[in-house]
Length: 512
Ligand SMILES: Nc1ncnc2c1ncn2[C@@H]1O[C@H](COP(=O)(O)OP(=O)(O)OP(=O)(O)O)[C@@H](O)[C@H]1O
Ligand SMILES: [Mg+2]
Image 1 (tube, helix red, strand yellow):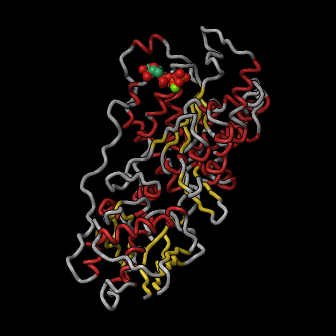
Image 2 (cartoon, rainbow, N blue to C red):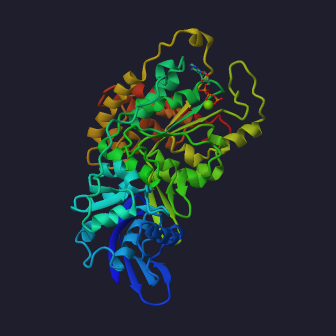
Image 3 (cartoon, rainbow, N blue to C red):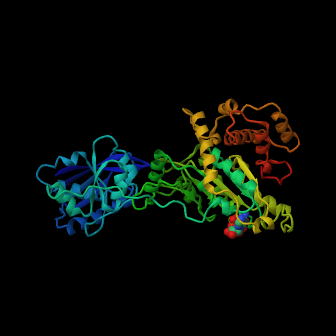
């Protein structure tokens, strides 16, 4: 009359164990689910009844109580269908007189269709990872078999309820889950840095951004190649480590975006449109889901036409840029999603795009320019280390055959610089120069003889703030690493100053 089936649920991107207890008592037919279920879990009732009947079993016309324990965790999603249906069968004595031993150590996950077939669900990988190293087994939907195999947990794949019930009754074995063969195709061909003509300054800035994991903003007139450069940026970053790959795949799994069950092995590149809502960008919803910032975890978030994003969306970037994670608070729970991404933003210098253009006149009034730029508030710009102003492509550059360096050569230098940082930050929370704490900044960025005069000029003549000087030190450190220099040199500092030109005092109010 009482049965207990084991299953899992998600809290953020971590799996938690849940017991699906089913109690069948005599009395008027009723069906209640308790234990903080959300609407989708309550709907399981109708699916479970239909699936049980269409799998050739009677659904008991009695008083049925389903308890999903522990009750303090919010239960969301449709994957409780399978354990609940099996729990009803077990409590009704349809799985043998004595519950099979397998029930103790086997976790069940799956949504049921009305005909009893088992449908794939989101979040299988992070749920299963909660069982790692504990000798447990799981039964997952056949549609999630490849993703489940990646977890390293012993898993069986289920196609329908009848098959699982037969297996628990000592019938035919369920097929084990196997990892998919092959890798996901790498970056699309025809997207190489060598195709970008001219723009040597911007390319160099992108190399520095990749080499120190610095956020970067590109400011320039229409058609200068900002979007083109940004879309080629991902190729400069080194491949993900196995841990990074697993972390990113967990976020994709929770969002139901794991394709063919493969681990995400390429660094993500996300380019949401500027009409995106702040919830979709940051994460949220009544049943929290990771947003674009989390889907870009360990990769690149490209925000093209940056000032066109809504003010709340831009402001909401502050938390992930600062803490490398997002906390979504709801009435009954609060979940955190990792969001350590490299921000590449692109914008025009003014609404018409031609402010500062060597030939064309700008049609904007100073007020329009100030309003446009003020959308990118100081606190956000503060978290963007590199500011790059692009000029229009010159005819000589455009006409010349592409002769820029291919991405692989730049990526090799980036990888070498990041290797130096890995050694430098061993045992520290910072993994790259962009994440150095104040103390680390002082320890690793000592100024060379003669460099203080460069900074003094920047501060006194160009109006740079103390904050800008910190940024300059960070960038100088990365330039020195690219140069394989243990100590920062004066020339590194001079180059770094050029990447903070939006901080100059002569720009309209609201920019810096
Ligand atoms: N530096 C460049 N080298 C080669 N082609 C370029 C370059 N800049 C622009 N182009 C060409 O112009 C097209 C538009 O460039 P892109 O979209 O990158 O401009 P943008 O700076 O993002 O402009 P907008 O401000 O309008 O978004 C590219 O697809 C490419 O064909
Ligand atoms: Mg563009």
